[in-house]
Length: 189
Image (cartoon, rainbow, N blue to C red; front, side, top):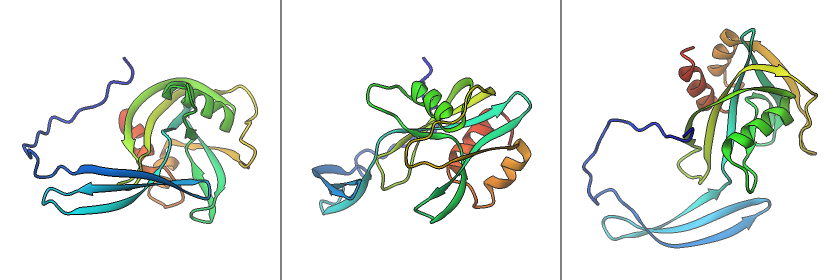
């Protein structure tokens, strides 16, 4: 099955000394964001509340054409308050699996299709519930114009794999972890 997760061969015998127990959860809205307020009991018995970003699962796609060009999306991002280059990707919709979401997002954001291969899943950050499913898409071909969401204004850019590796170190990209995972999967690091 494509969703087989990579499992490390590292094993730790921590028993319960590192485990936290969820005591209570509540969800609050902050604009269009949802905050999960989760109360934990720590291994020493104390209770501590954490405010987490409650986010949907998403996909990120390292898309590469037959002539070894990486397909990226250039768009304004409100968090860093600037234009970034990004891998195509986005949220998994209700009733949709990760592979279907990856194919849809790649086509919507870039107009490209390719041979999708699942790489691995990764967590977004220590204070988010998001799981990102990372894919590579090989032999990508442009089959249509992009059809971004109504609040997305995008420009599709293609660059060489070498330029992409250099950009991963520049701070001008988002989804850096997903990019490195894809390049590693393909043996291109």
